[in-house]
Length: 424
Image (cartoon, rainbow, N blue to C red; front, side, top):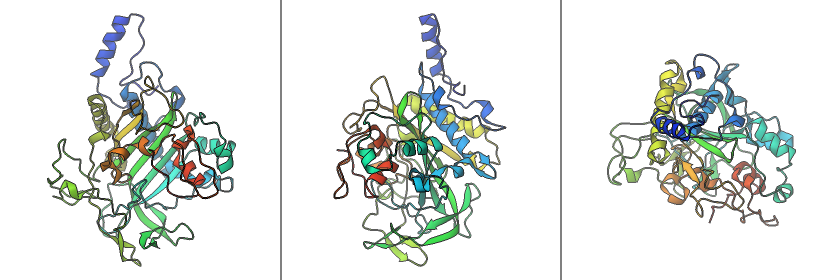
């Protein structure tokens, strides 16, 4: 088992059990040493603890997945061999062509624009378990999905991931980041604003990009709602102070997506309806986005805060000093406290949020830049829930509340790529 730092073993004597649990609270959340110096153990989501599970267990498996997905296999990180989100369609079931095709952020539809006036790109990936579940149940077909069992869950081990990438300029030092050459879909004017067109976008090949953000969503035993974990490059953006003055500066130093001495109210401002081309040929866009992370470790209680901080420090201390992955950290993770409830159709956190736990205000500075300041949108389940979808294309049946509606890959396919409505 890889869950060791915060795990309490059952005791026959209840008093001993109570004492050992109290002691475990004071043990710093850390990563097992056998994760380092060789191949990282394959995560075992089917063995996730069901008894005496601790907050640390969730952050440990989140970090283990990140390290396992970024481990080099045949010269590239393992996540590069995941399938694309197109692989839920039978005709693309083997697709691993990771073209960067996303620039609009979920819900806000804003574009993160870096200091070089370039849009930050994204792409979505899924593993074989996720893909096969969709294909085997023909959930790529809207009619089949509409009639699917509302209470059916994704299987244990199903995983999706989302990465965000900054375009590296010729004179830019990106030595602390994971970089690669990627194909990107180019922006053009769509309804008067810079966007990637839905049909027949132009493609630029072999663009150097750097990984700045990474989401992991994975189903583990006992948690059909997925654990939603988020990671970032350590120098992306500063954190707000605990009682940040909106008119006060967030940091007096420069960050990748933040200029020194920018005041808080000038950060994370959505640019929908404002973004415009400076030069379409050069693919430059304005205005530059000033980014700050509004909730340290994604919020949550003191235990959650300490566990993330301790685990991040412990992992960094054990990763090779030569590894770029030493420069990434877990922002946080969110899941359900199953003693208070489990996933059911027509659930969303704006109605019942008591069972959401962990980093309850989790946002990635590069993936949810703009929604982190909107209370009803500033955590993963605000967007990923089992609510019904009523805003569908003309002639298509309304989609009732289903557990599988957590997946926007499925919802986007059902909704023909149109915007997914917010929960009420």
